[in-house]
Amino acid sequence: MTYPSRIIRATALTCATALLTGCSLLGSDEDETTVLEVWMMNHSAGEDFVQQVVDDFEARHRDVEVRVTFQEWVGIGDKVNEALTTGEGPDVIEVGNTQVAQYVNTGGVKDLTNQVVDLDGDYWVPGLAEPGKVYGHQFGIPFYAANRVVIYRKDLFQEAGIEEPPEDREEWLEITRRLDEVPGRQGIYLPGQNWYVLAGFIWDEGGDLAVESGGRWTGALHTPEAAAGMAFYAELQALGDGPVDTDEANPPHEEVFASGEVAQIISTPGSAQAITDLNPELEDKLGFFPVPGKEAGEPGAVFTGGSNLIITEESAEPLLAYEFVKLITGDTWQTELARSRSFVPNRTTLADAVRDDPGTAAMVAGAVNGRATPQSPRWGQVESDNPIKTYQTAVLTGADPLAAGEEASEVITRLLAYTPSG
Image (cartoon, rainbow, N blue to C red; front, side):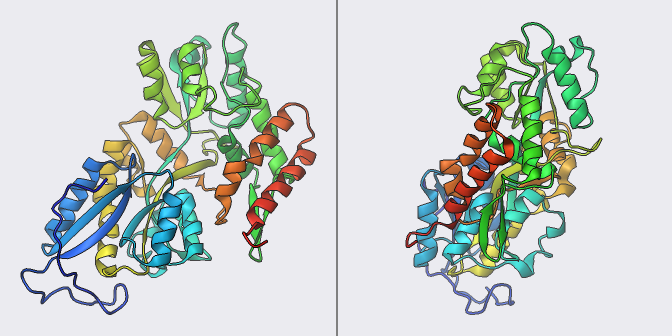
C-alpha cells in the first residue's frame, strides 16, 4: 500500500559526501523537490501516526517529499534482502528488532554507531538497542517496543486475600499456589510451549538460548542455568491446567482466560482488549504487573519485541534519511506513539508518558530488563523449526532437563550453522 501523500516526481538532490558530513541542501532550483523513500510496516505504528510525522518533517524541510510505502510482515525478509542487495530500495526501512542481524549479514545497512550519542542512545530500551547492534556497531535505531506482563483478575486476587501484586518470583509462586487451590480455578494458565516466557526465566538465571564464540553460534539449553529456568517454568506451569504440548495460540490463551476462572496469564497488555471483547463482564476486573524477578522489586527478564529503523547504504539522501529517523525516534513523537498506540517508547526516560495507562505502564516497567533473541542472522530458522518447544514438552512430561537440553542444543547449533553450501 502506497502512502497517500503528495507524490511528486522530481529530480532528487544528491549529497556526494557521507552521512552527517555537513553537506548543504540549499541552493536548489525552486521547482526541484527531493524525494525521501521510506518503508514502514503495516499493523505497526499506524498510518495516522506516520502521517503526522511526515507532515512535521515536510514542514521542517519545505523542498522534501516523503514517500511512504506500507509493507506486510509476511515475506518482508526476502523483500528487504533484495532491496539491500540490489541497492534499489528505499532510504529508510522499519524492521523487526530481531531481524537486524540478518540484514546486516546481507550487507547494505548503514553503520550509525557515530550517531548514537546524538540520538540519546544511553537511554534506549535494552531489548531494542542490543539487537540493533551487530559486531559491536549500531545499525538499527530503536523505534518502539512491546513485552509481556502478567494480566490478572483483580477480583480473584481480592477473594483470595491478595492485596498487592507479588514482589519477586517466590512470592509469585506462593500467591499463584493459593489461587490454584480454589476449586474450579486455575492459578495461572501457562501452556507448556510458551518459549518466549521460558527465555525470560533462563535469562534470569544467567543463561541463554544460544551463545556466540569466535563467530560460531551454539545452542545453550543444556546448561545448568537453562535447566534452572526451565525448573521455575515447570513449577509455575503446574499451578494451572495449561496443556504441556501446545503454545499460547493453541487454543488462544485470551479465550481460555475469558471463558474460565483463570487468575493470570502472561501476555502483552493488548490481550486485555481481546479478553474483554470475549467477556465484557471482565471490563473492570483486569489488572497488570511486570513479570516478577528473582529479587524483590526487580522485574524479571522478558523478551522485547518491536521495531528498529535502518538506513540503507545506497540511500541517495543519507542526511535526510538520518534526520527523518532522528525525528520519529525523538522525544516528541515517541511520547505521542506511546500514548496513542500503548507501546513502550524507545527510551527509559519517557516512562511517565504512559503512567495513566496501567497495562502499558506495567510493560514499560518490565522493559528495563528486556532482552532479545540471539543475534544470529539465522535465528529465524530456529523459531521456524523450534526445538525449544520440543524441549519444553519433553521436560514437562518427565525427561531429564540436562539430557533434553543437550538434544535441543544440538539442533539449535545445527540450524544456526547451516549454510546453503554446507
